[in-house]
Amino acid sequence: MAKVKDTAGKKEGYFGSVRFFKHTIILGSFAVVVTATVFIVLTLFRNDDVVDDLERNLLTGEIVDGRGILVTPENIDQIIADMSEPVQDGYYIATQNVDWVFDTWDTSSSNAFVENVIDNTRTVYFDLHLEATGDLVYSSPFMPLGSKLEGFALDSAVSAGEHPAIVTYHLVDDEFQNLTTVSVAVLLRILG
Image: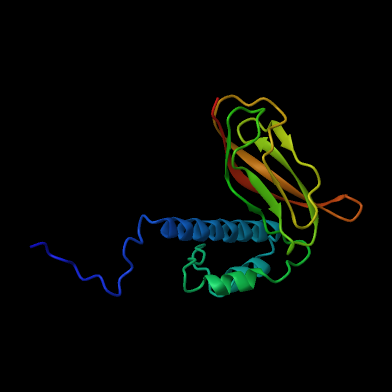
C-alpha cells in the first residue's frame, strides 16, 4: 500500500512553478528600479547633507553602510506607493533593463527597453557609449513622459561578445536644451 503525504495547507509545487518565476521576475524588476533610482539620486546630488538625508530616509527605511532595502512581498506595496509620487524636478527614475541582447549590432535587440515613466518631470534622450573605448554606438530620439523605447538596433558596428557600456540620460527643458545628465551601466551582448 502506497503512503500518501498530507499536504493540506501547504503551497504545493510553488518553487519551480510559473507563479514562482513571475514573482521572482517582478521582485527582481523592482529591485533594479530601486537600485537605479538610488544611484541616480546620489549621482545628481553630491551635497553631503542631502545625500545623508536621502540615505537615511529613502523609501520607508534606512540605508546603512550603503545597503538598500530588500524588496519582499511584505513591503512591496509600500515601496510602490512611495515610488508612485511624482519625481521632483532634477531627479530621474531610470526604468530599463541592464543586460541588452542583440543577434548582431545592426538587428533590433530582443530584450532592451528604456522607459521615461509618467512620474518623471522631463523629456529625455540617451546616448550609449562603450565603456572601454568611449565610442558612441547609439543615440535615442527624444522620449516624452510615458514613452517606451524597445526593439532598437545600434547605430555603429560592435563586434560579437560582451561589452560593458554606459547609458547617459540627458534631461531636457521645454526647448529641448540639456539640463542635466545621469549615467547607468549596461552590458551589451552581441551574439554574432
